[in-house]
Length: 553
Image (cartoon, rainbow, N blue to C red; front, side, top):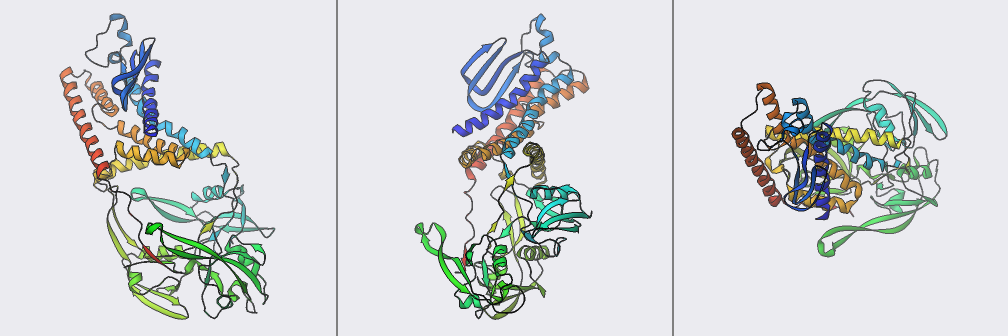
C-alpha cells in the first residue's frame, strides 16, 4: 500500500505542480493546492494559498480564482482571476500539468540509466552466418574503431551502425594482439516490437553474447563419447584452465594432434517432483573425463568429437508438430528444405518467415539421419492484456546459456543517461499513443485497460524488484497519466483545452448551464472508464503457466 501511495502521490504532485507553477508565474491567484479528493486530512495556509492532503489519493487539483463561474471576485482581484487571462495563458496553465507528466519521466529514466556504470565491452561474441560480418569478424575480436570513430562499448558499436544502412563502414579490431581492418556494410533488419510496431535498423550480424561451453557429442563412436561425455554437458575446466566460453575450449584444443586433455564438466540432472511438483529443477553433477582428439588436421574440438550444442534440440513441446514427427531431445538438426542449418537463430527466422509453408527438416538421431515434412503450428487468440495475436509457433528449443565479457566503465555516463532517458521517454510516449490508436482500430480490446488494482499490484512488485524498476514503472505511469489527461473529455485537461479553444474561436464564453452539462457528461464518461478498468482488474487472470516441455537428460 505504501508503494502505491508514494507512486500515485508523486505523480499527482508533479502534475498539479505544473498547473500551480505556471498559474503563479502568470500572477493568477491560487486558492487551493490539493493532493487527493474528498475530506481534508491535513493542511495549512501560506499566503493566499491553502495546501491540503485529502482522503482519497487517486487525484488532485489546483483551484484557481475565477475558474468556477460561481466564484465571487472582488474588483481588485479581477486581473488575477483565471477567466480574465488571455487565451494563450489559459492554454499554458492547463497544458502545464500533462506536460510535467511527460517531462518528469526524462528525469526518472536519467536516474535509471545513470546506474549503468559498467557497460558491455566492444567484443564480438557471436557472428551470424549470412550477415555482413560473416567471414570478416571472429568471436573474440575487440572492436576499437568504426568508420574512424573510437568505440569502447558494444553500445557504441550498435549506435555506429544502426542508422548507416547501406553505407560501407571501416571496422578496426584487435585480434590476437594484432590490428585487423575490415569494411562492412550494414544491412536492413526489421524488428517487430509491441503493438505490431516495425522498426528498421542497420546491423552487421554480431552480438556480444558468447555461447558457454555446452557441448554436443554427435557420434557414439567419437573420443568424447568414449570418454563418457554426453550432449549438454557443460565444460568448466580443460587442461587445468578454467573455461567460461566455447571460445576458451576451442583455444585449449587448438593445435592438438592427439594429446589427452583432462576435462571437468557438469551434467544437468532433472530432480523429479521438486517441491512437490511445483517447479522443475535441474542440478549439476560434476564429472571428469580424459579426451584424446584423433590425429590430423582441422579443429581439435571436432577431432575430439565435440561441437557447440547450439543445433541440438533440448526441449520439444508435447503435442507440437515437431513432437508428432518423432523429433526428440538430443537430436541434432542438419538441414531445412535441403539447405544446411548453421545457426539456431537464423534457422528460426527462416521457419517463421515462411509461415504456413510446408518444410522438410533433416536431423540426426545418434548415427541415424531422419527426414520429415511438417508445418508450424499456428497460434491465435487474445493475450491477458486483450491484444489479439496470430503467429506461428516453433515447438522445439535449444539450450545454450550465453555469457558476456567483464564489463568496462561507462566512458560517458552523463551523456549516455541523457540520450537514453530522452529516447526511452519518446518511445514510451509513442507506445502509449499507439495503444489508444489500436483501441480505436479494434486491434486492442477494452480488456487491456488497467485500473488502480493493477497499479497497486505492479507497484509492489516493482518496488520489491528494486529501486530502478520502481522508477521505471513510475515513468511509464507518468506518461500514461499525461496523455490520458490530454484526451478531450470534460473534467480532464484535454476537455478544458477544447473548451477554451471553442470559446476562443466563438469569442464568447459558454453559459453556466452548458458547462454544467458538459461536466456531467465528462463525469459519466470517467466513471464508466474507471468501472471498466476495475472490472478488468478483477477479471484479469493470473499469469499463464509456461508450456511444459520434455527434456533430454
